Length: 455
Image (tube, rainbow, N blue to C red; front, side, top):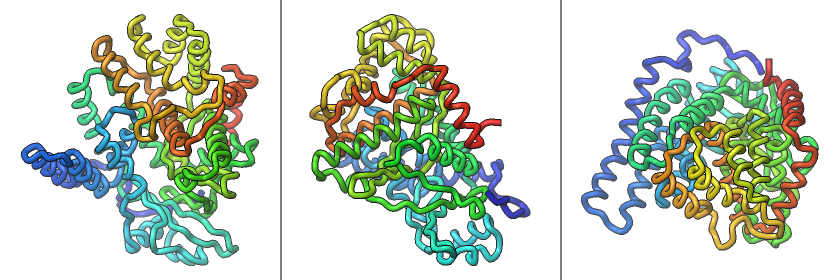
């Protein structure tokens, strides 16, 4: 990556004034949603919750940045939000409003210097995609290659620190209202991942890491970095074209099954071989190619690298569920980092584990959850677990668990959208071939070193 041109009075640094301004901006945007909530409380109506949810989503969309991303993240946690809110918040990243061309020109000049446009044969004025922390523009290089330019919004470092403070307040309120889960580790984990997402040099290395880990899966394509046109807050990479997963919801069953199997290997191969997951299950991060014969994997800002022993706990719990071994399950939760466990708490956690592990325990061709839609996936089970935890808990969730659980739910929802029917048990057993914590540690160390993610 090229060095960012020097700038006097860099507005990007995490500064107190930026954080104060951010807090004021978010507060102003959310005030409209607060008015909507008050009106709903006064006048009610069958569509009151939906209107309020829409107002909150619009306010967060205007704010951009971390809180918007967190809202989208929380929408994927089953039963954490009412259905109306989850539905509205889940659209935030897919439908975020883009910044205009004057903004883009200023940002590109700041990253690549004066005359930046001459470095491209063409550069689209309209964003191809806009999300919570940045937006993507299509461009063409002078050698004819089409590239994607991912440009970070200004002042995001200040936004993260400001929004994290508000996140702590929101989740603290949730804890007082609900009492089933201690959200402290969740806040810490989300905060660290958000800070990492601002580090485009790290994301570039994540991209290289996934290219290496999935090199043996020819059906998966990962974009390649263009280092000479990348900078501190700009990533330029090869453009990948494909269709949305939703375009295949009515495809022949065999096609849908094949896409689901490719998704399985794209997620589980890095997890079980390298202790690495793609932590953002947003369906927009997957594209289908070749009419259903290939997968493009996009966006490497939210990648979670686990200690190898954590994956050992995942496998230990799987085997405990297979044999109904309570003591082995107890030990697996301890390996994961659950604290102050009791027999009663482990029995509650096993309710969730049997749901998550259900498809890979059951040695038959099946859907990931019979008779359940993607939007309902996990809601009934999560509600039951939370009610039990109110009686037996609370439980403090290990921070490593947060994104793994979220990503697993996102993957399951994708299977449901496709209506896939597979023998998940057989696939999972195949993914464990040659598994040991020591082997995972050796593979991970070599891969991280090759991608420049270790000293």
